[in-house]
Length: 98
Image (cartoon, rainbow, N blue to C red; front, side, top):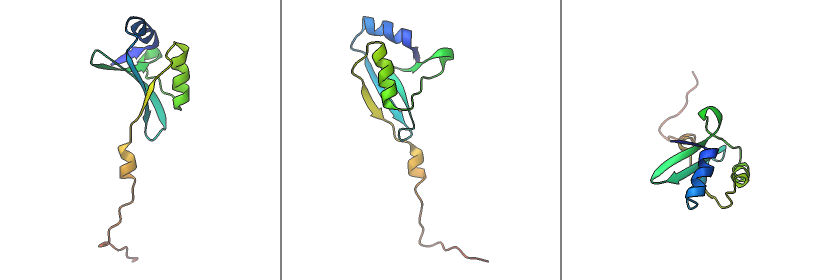
């Protein structure tokens, strides 16, 4: 589900203990903000319902501090691509030049 900054601000006024965390995706390539409230999970979105994506964790923290959110957890989401990118060595296969 999606949530805009104004909605997050109003939610925090009514429920200050709402859980907010910054998530790292694809080995820190980009970061997003996730909000958990009433067993629902929301992603912070901007204009035209596009997700807010940050280049680093500090940028996400700075944006959240502008609306009064001081303490935010962070979570790293590991990419499955990094496991797939590992070279596979097979001792039974040999390259032959024709």
